[in-house]
Length: 306
Image (cartoon, rainbow, N blue to C red):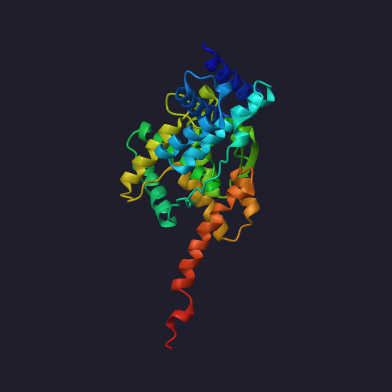
């Protein structure tokens, strides 16, 4: 291991053990830092100059979307703060670099409610028409997964990482460990959702015991993110839905529907597990677009003959 590799490895170990960052954040840091290290080789990372940083940023802007560039720069900025904290460098090159650029505001993509209903209907149809126990168990688990995604706005990573004891179907609550191991409890407010979760738990009792996670496959292994994505693609196709649906779109739909129903944004922030209200506020732009549609098509002024 050369000096550059050791420096980045020490930093990632610090992020894991001291900052307690989650595995996906660590993976992103590793990718971003490796990319920078390849760019500067054979130079010493501790001798990085503001000019070198700026040239690297220019390369990033040529190859990635603004949101990705922003993340990669943040990863790099964090390691230089670490070097500064450890007194490994005299001057932080980021102190002489202006990192400001406009990121296009992308509204979160939601699923129309009639499409969510059609999506769930096709799963329950598969469940009622199942010819084998294997098909029935799959459809039962799939219904439980999608119902929980939509009922709570849970992230797919959080759903797949739910421990068996984190789901309390007696008081209808789930304990979620979100980003940065932040804990939050979300209520299951719909009896039909609670009922399908109870049926799933009874049916998968052995598999849940084997893997100790609430959502499992029929081999007794923890359900993976990729399995949920394949599941969604399967039912999108079966329902002939002309829309690419991702797990995160259920989360966006959950938040947008609550906001449009006049739920206080701070309650939504808590349910989503956002650390900052500014992250949740992106959904207000969605409701503004809905407001525009309503006022354009429904306001009586459009019928005046003047």
